[in-house]
Length: 589
Image 1 (tube, one colour):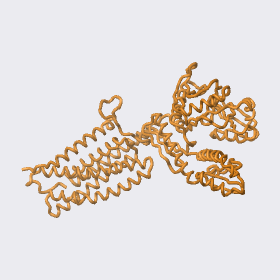
Image 2: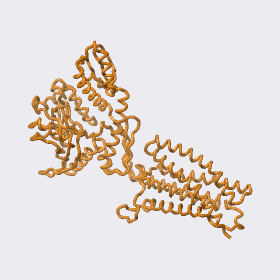
Image 3: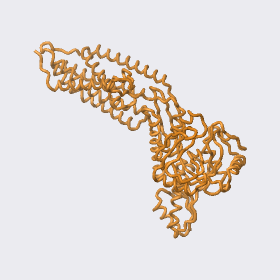
Image 4: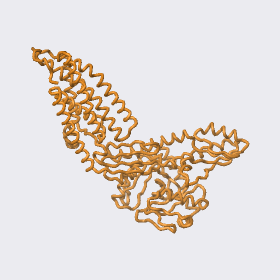
């Protein structure tokens, strides 16, 4: 005579079978290495492999906050200058940048500007600054003179906002570039870490990420200094001030040095910029070689009335005459209005399209331009030109980076190394699991088989959840899965040893199994809870591989509790119910 299996037991069995079937559907495409494009299997999602398993590019980028802080301070100084015009009673006379010692980086990180006023109105000016300009602080004071810098809290806010915007812009660019599962995160207060699994064109990816893409439209001033005179002036400045461009130097630093030396020699509110040419057209100047691909200086009006912030769309389009690819852009209503006013006011003059401080082109304004325009990209070969045009359109659509990024570290992981890691990781996991399975079946006999079934289902569920969450599997993630098996074995050992103790005390098999699971649960739960706390801390504070390890660990804790307690209990209950009462006097454990 057999005992009847309860309705609850059957319900649990149906639930378990459903979960196993669902997990199998999720895991099959990965284990069978299905091609998502050709496979007819209904579920096509495969596990995403991390940088260390499929190869790719690892970058650490530093954010240049000196330029960011200077731009912020320039805007603040402009606001103070305009506001002072309505506060004539305060006697504010002059607002101008403070002199900065270029040899001291800490001064570039914390720039300042000077405000001069009627010394008798010092308290009133101080109260006005404190009330209307909380973003500023007084860093120095003499009679009738304040030196103002960015307030510390506001500077920190600018830092956090700049890092956040940089990450968002990089993510948007990479999404359009087509990299699956990129990992982008901040590191410390001034670094961004980018992981691009599967990337093969390293130089193109770096170019796409690092390009600031600050687009400006500036009027060329040819009235005071002709192009030929300007070229001679640049050559003179290079020679007189020993300004040279060295390999590896930032071109922006070269341009800054030229403009600093040109103060007093060019009109106020003007700046010198250079046009881009083909890489083979570097030029020689009296002070040394200018960078290849940079030539023809332009004298520009510094103020940009229209910028890329007003850009609505950008796309590649062929030139009507030459069919060479250019980048066409469209402005939003605000940008179209501003561009229309500027071009109407400067008909007959040249307007420079400036990208990251480099003049891309400078056409003559024939008529009013409002909502659209075109950027030409030089005379490179067609394939290079098309690639540059596509990348430029991507970065313009995704938005400009709020700060200049510097590549501090680069690691390229080859796909063969990743395949080798997968093979060795899989081999180690299989050998480890087989040894554990053999020990459990040898030491706990038939009950060890139950443990093996539980462990296999544990691994299946963990892997299926990773696929379902579209998580990225890395080497630390594989370590997390291995640790999950270890924790699950530990839980089985605690349960089985508790059942043995209950049997030694003379309880029946059914009573010993019931008491063993109940009394072992507290210890199992406590152990997994402490692991879960550590996993949660690692996930919250960790980045990259550490975070991946934490996620697999937390998933493993959940599946371990389910399999060790629910699945094993279900198998034991079914075994006991299906055995004849007279035959079930002992348990193979």
